[in-house]
Amino acid sequence: MNRTDANIVVPATSAAGYRKLAAAGQAAAWDGIELRLDLMAEDMPEATACGQPLLLTARHPSEGGAAAAGDTAARSGWLRPWLPLAWGVDVEIAQAAGSALLLEAAREAGTAIVLSMHDFEKTPATDVLHGRVEAAIALGADIVKVAARTESRADVARLLSLFAAFPAQRMAVMGMGRFGKASRLAAAAAGSVLNYCSAGEATAEGQWEVGAFRDLLVTAGIR
Image (tube, rainbow, N blue to C red; front, side):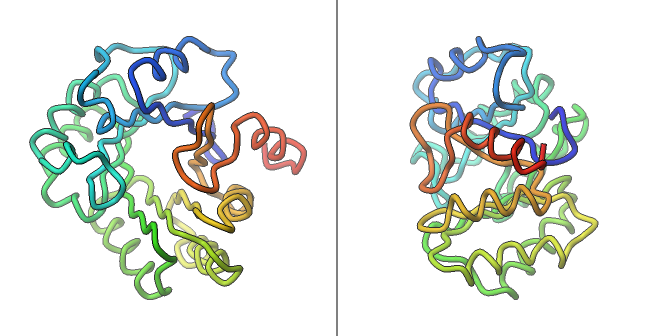
């Protein structure tokens, strides 16, 4: 990405959507595009550079991915052609062991490794969150991503506490649900290196529209 922190990422969930985002070029209001390849299985775009940083994702069904992405070999097959063209690849912490060859190929290509967890029902207890982050660090994550449902201020505080608990680790932290928007703005201020926004229809409850979020970051002096 272009920055060491507060990068803004917009998801592309279809080949047509990806082409539209890529066409924005250097004038884009975001810093990178997340390619949700699990949602493009029936219409996969050709693996070509687009002039913007790409973050590859083929989300497992257990963490919000398409049903077709349940097969490890299929996910690897979608992701591998893009690795030399991508800034980073996002693999779930729970799937990292089974994706060892893919992660090795990513390291050889110089592609950053994001290891992630997603809980769409709740914000886990602090010890559970710490355990997931520690597992990701042990697996060699360049960035650890934590996304959880936030329905209270306590949920937001628990997520934000990860920055103090792991000060040397690059983190991407975000909430979904009732306090999703508040959590994402607070996380960007706290040091979240990847901040997901929508450039159209939101892909998660609590996402900001990209222009509005960028303006808030600028006004707050975060960017």
